Amino acid sequence: MLKDLVVIELAGVLAGPDVGMFFSELGAKVIKVENKQTSGDVTRTWKLPTENKTSSVSAYFSSVNWNKKYLQLNLKQEVEQKKIHELVKKADVVIANFKKGDDIKLQMDYKTLKKINPKLIYGAITGFGSNSERVAFDVVLQAETGFMSMNGTKKSGALKMPVALIDVLAAHQLKQGLLLALLKREKQQKGSFVEVSLYDAAISALKNQASNWLMNNYIPETIGSLHPNIAPYGEVFTTKDNKQVVLAIGSDNQFIKLLDLIDATKIKSSKKYQTNPLRVNNRKSLTKELIPFFKQYNRKPLMDLLIKNNIPAGAIKNLKEVFEDTTAQNLINEETIDGVKTKRVKTAIFKIS
Image 1 (cartoon, one colour):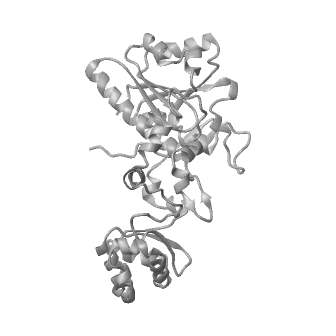
Image 2 (cartoon, rainbow, N blue to C red):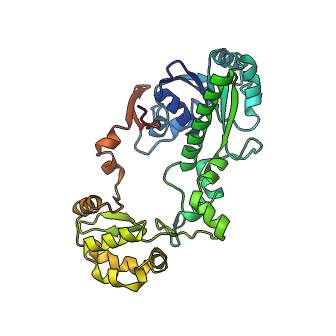
Image 3 (cartoon, rainbow, N blue to C red):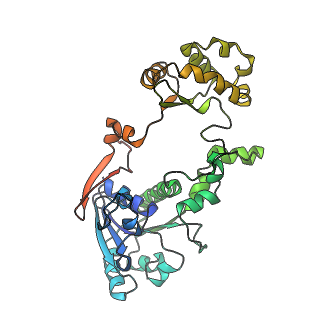
């Protein structure tokens, strides 16, 4: 799709490399430039205890690097800088996530590169914006933008998400911005500077929780997987075979249909649960009353029954179970990097016809 596009990736860790991998999946030639002084992207060393300690590749690094050309350079040396400048002459996009001022020191800032190639599109990822010098990792942003305060339970306290969610969100924002910049260049024949901060991406993703505060001064409590506005939504139930399912009942009709399916006549007749606001107010007693009904079923037949009758529910799966599904398997890309067989899930998952 983008086989004639040349992308230079001057970015490390997750967000920037994920954008680079997005373009490589679409057919672009992606050149990843790594810091020679640190033996490359720092995530090459972010390994599980079970991973090969001597290998130059980790699972974390592999997750956002696929089908790229790798160059390790010392950009503090002028001769190495000139190598990048030569590449920029024929490049379409540069992706960068430098700390404030480092791009200028290394002659890799947009102003410098634009002089070399006026049609260049420069995508910059920052932590707290281009004027901030704060070091930003995903968990810091999860803390600063409210996500951790909403995740967890009163017992557990604030928890981070198990994936680098803010990095992923920022990467998606930058992908959109760069695609629009490419469209703009097609029409106006000039380059663009596209900037996305992790902070802005996180705030933008607060969605309904942001509006709960902005319109009602409601500060979300740590209620685990539960939903502050809907019940039973996010409630987890254990089945007869000791597995778990989660409900996502979004309407009164779905709730009544669920009760009819599991033959919960007493709950159906109770005035405490007739409407969603009542169910939200009485969710603890509702959950307690629903528990025995789910204990009557093994998970698979229960899920078959719920799916057949269009009741929103999900089986809570571990990653082994997830990747036993052929749909998930179709999202895997494989590649050998530095002699290591690597796997990752695709980042460009849309279908165009």
